[in-house]
Image (cartoon, rainbow, N blue to C red; front, top):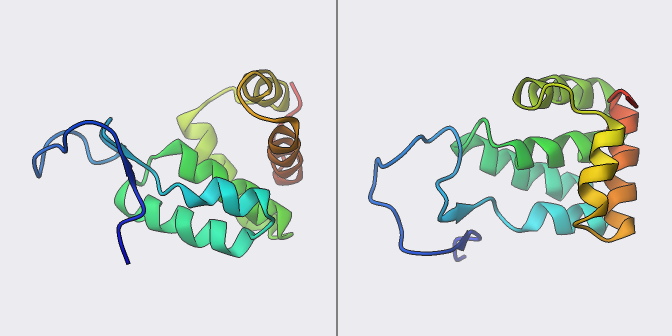
Length: 125
């Protein structure tokens, strides 16, 4: 199976850059957000885990994992991962998520994210 990454621009040479986050020419596997939208939460977690193994501080994959775990009712795990996300984004709130994502995503995705974050215990304000 082909690599599921989306690439923009020329690839970076091996060992270039900080490997704690993806280089600009590498994007997390494109599937987690789609798995979330189709309520395929286990698969979203699997893909987020794959990304996090290579880029452990990549916030998008952490976000997908928090939301998927929360929607599966795995609240304790979701809260643990939310703590990690809050280390990357201190001050993150439901209000902030709504404001940020409403400008960029369709309402159903915003609702899905907000409901997941709320279940995981993200503060409203």
